[in-house]
Image (cartoon, rainbow, N blue to C red):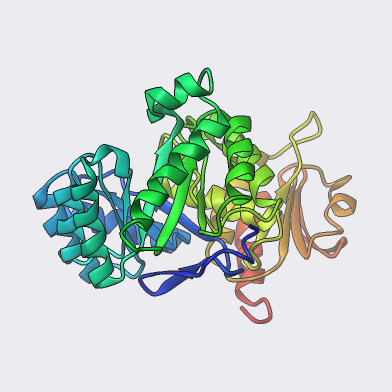
Length: 352
């Protein structure tokens, strides 16, 4: 099923599936029991554009902390559960908007039933999560290794386990660090279910490798109409995950709004700190709800021509630079004033 055909699932005050916008998720890396630190991180993620947040719940103390955290944040909270079904129930009792479990590792059917019963009472969606790294031995043997087919069969087995208890309020997540295996698994799964899919490349790596693997994998999946919510998993500050996710969605035409920053590569003609300037502009642009393109060019010779497709741009020279609108030079300013001049233009941009 494409995202237009998947079930609509409500997570707190947000919805996914049924053609609704693809929502961006992340996960805190604080101790959930530390309410102040967890809230502080979630607020930073909210500001960056995170729309659903997941917190690990390894203890009863963490489950109870959810109640306090929820009072201080503005986005739905997903409780991440491993092994202990009691933590899933406690998390829901304390206000979790969704829970993430692997029904295969929280015990027997009676424990799965207890979790489903609690979710059903509160109409809380369950994210059924399966990773390639935890694929059951019998499926590894059946498919002669870890395969896309095995991952899908494992996930659907877990879904059917929950369906047996007359519950269909689910989101499915299948992840692998093998990008092409992950893509193939999503293609197979989407053809067999109409539950919304949470898409991501797990254990993708650090900022550079993680972004490359996630961008390739998510683009190949999302561009087929598959996927209702995403997480870019990076080893680092989770705020970077949100920045990357927003750019992936915007590049694929799945997200409108927000300033698109384009910048040229450095070369021998560059006489300014283009790398530093481009990073400053990207940080500045993140604070404006404008649907425009901003160019940052290092060469005052080719800059105006290269920036003509942008709404506004700056191009550096030797100790000075140009402000450019639609390829036309507006004025020349000292290099030290380039960022301030651009900020002033953005501050006074129509419909700001």
